[in-house]
Amino acid sequence: MKLSKIIDECRLEKIVFCTDCEVETGYCGDLMSDVMAHAEPECIWITIQAHKNSIAVALIKDIKSIVFTNNVTVEKEVIEKAKEEKINLLRTNKDSFTVCGEIYCLMEAETAKD
Amino acid sequence: MSANYSKEKLTLVNELIYQIKVKEAMSKKVIFFKENTTFREIQLKLKEKKISGVPILNNVKNIIGIVSIDDVITAFDKGYVDNKITDYMSRDVITIPQNISVVSAIHKLERFGVGRLPVTESSDSKRIVGVITLSDILNRLLVVVQSIAEKVEDKEIKNTQISHDLIKSISKKPLRFEVRGDDFDNAGRVASITKKYFQNLGISKDIIRRIAIVCYEAEMNICLHSLGGSITIQVNDNNAVIYAHDKGPGIPDVELALKPGFTTASEKIRALGFGAGMGLPNIKHYADKLEIKSSLKTGTELKAIINLGVKNEIK
Picture 1 (spheres, chains in turn brown, yellow):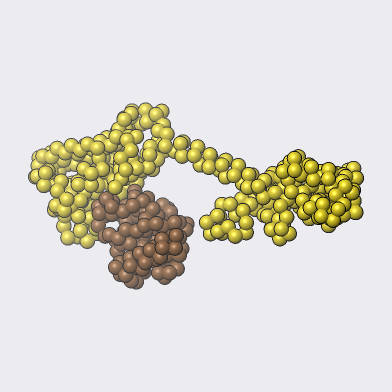
Picture 2 (cartoon, rainbow over the protein chains, first blue to last red):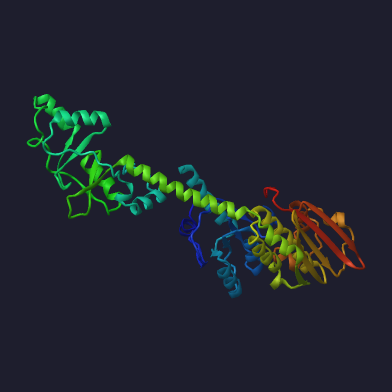
């Protein structure tokens, strides 16, 4: 499903929005090595870790979109780095559990339509 | 090819039918008749060519009418099949100019319920230069889609072909990075640079990802747990070797360190999402071969080998 649809439906704040893309799967995790090992390429990553290393992990894993939950502060240099590497950064005041649930339901509904 | 095709799914086709011009899709060989023909002559031609209608043209190939199979049947029915068509043919002919996109042709064919449209030289001309049917449009569409598919295929082949020349030049000059201990701001830099570098070599995406993951974890280990060190990446014909050296303090029990979940990281490090005890297990998982030598006196030496071109999917 389109990232833009997820953003609209879950009312995510766009911090950096480079390009719309297809999202087929997601991963939720705050441990870098865990995300390194298990996230799938092109997935949407839900995390509370809003630091420069998150961008590096996304870059290495070909993750195009990150959702920061719990309204965490995103530093300017993280935003700059994301822009540079063309990674979409989104934010929500909801917690990871809630936003994962919402995105999961959206994706399920989309698959059911097919 | 009707207006009922699923619009959501066929965006490429949608785009293409706007791009393709009638003149690219039409058949240029036009079977036509002049006015002084009988319905029977036309009927024989329709049967022979298996077509459903013919345009009637004058001496300069301007269209003056059309005779369809329906008109022929009516002629049989009413008993004037051996008469000249002049008095009976439909003069109200629906045509389409050649420089318009085929989407207009599709709409016209549907709106008037006809199987073919004579194509005129331009919108204000009656000179016929071709005939277009739905199957002409479909054929053209397939040709265009095929050529797009071939281009994509070519690109993929290019993308996955390993450039041996580049690899040769790199094997002479390995990549080398200094990594400082406790330098979180720059952590992940080696892996990012290495990944970009390898993308130019045309190595498959999966292999690059594995190299990047191994680099990242090795880099993080030096940054999190050591006094600093370096990472060297050496590419050979068949494999990439990642060396990570640090100045200490060394791993007391390498086997224990390789156990998933084992960590010596501080609370501060763990709050940032590092030190989950998965670094070395990840390296072990993604490398084809891993050697670790560690001494409490001289530090740790890690050597991870990843075979190039071996298609080991990332799980």
